[in-house]
Image 1: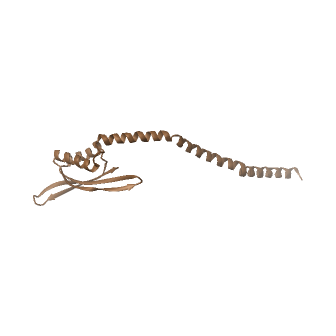
Image 2: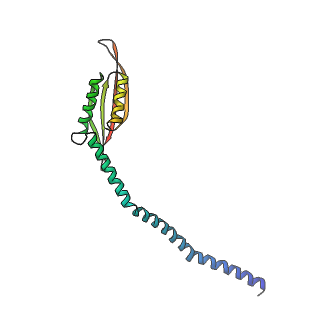
Image 3: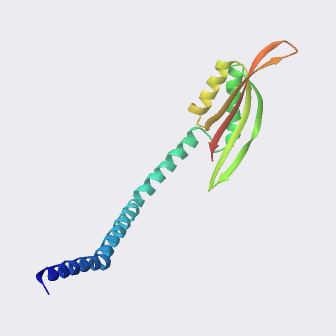
Length: 170
């Protein structure tokens, strides 16, 4: 055997040894290291659980205080909302034409109520009431506001109606 043949056999043997070592030792080490990283990330999440629980309890207290502040706990939300709308309507020459029973949807321990009502009157008064309902009273969010200009054929005068959809979580 010549020196050249011995060198070729040595190089091929070395490459074969490196491939086998990678397949049985290094590849397993890389896989275990990636599993270790994911488990370490999960451990960090579990370590933060008491802090998250404390934060959620503080939020619950805050939302309970809001319910108490806006007097939503003792009577139903629908009655409170109707009372607020009627009080504002009397003071600003609005007319509550229609107030439909709420549509309720239950998803994953969460109830979504959608209230539908119709107002009649001046544009500025309606917009102010909508702003008050959404921003000041915290009943929920307005998801649809539909204005219609209608004509009273008996008197020949036009009037404005607004259909309102308000969504709240409860």
